[in-house]
Length: 143
Image 1 (cartoon, helix red, strand yellow):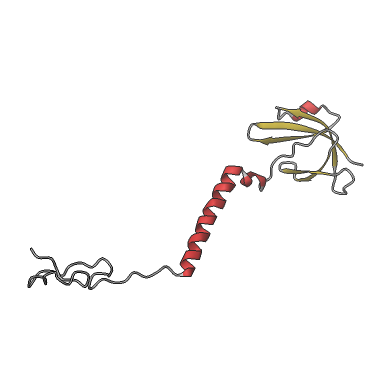
Image 2 (cartoon, helix red, strand yellow):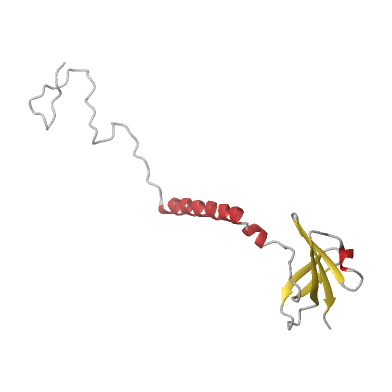
């Protein structure tokens, strides 16, 4: 077998008749279709998709989903709350006692129960629960 001629090796013999031409690694093979480059729009969409995935993971991992839902307010004794909504679906927000939205003052907080009778008859009682955290707020109406 002889060595094919090339510009780098002018003394090499020419390829035999009918033999395939030697492959030149610097050029695409004959008949090859050039590959299209990704457009800027596709690159931007890919980057946005990756960012969106990270945001979703962060929301799930850090519990931001819970921060955007109605969670019970575990107010402390002496704080004021605004109680709105119905008796079957009350909404409670901690507010300043001088706020016009304040409807009640927290007199007692009884943890680890959902029993509204624990406040006795002298207070309004509001049971709250989130997962295994349950408690009752014993409230007096604001005048």
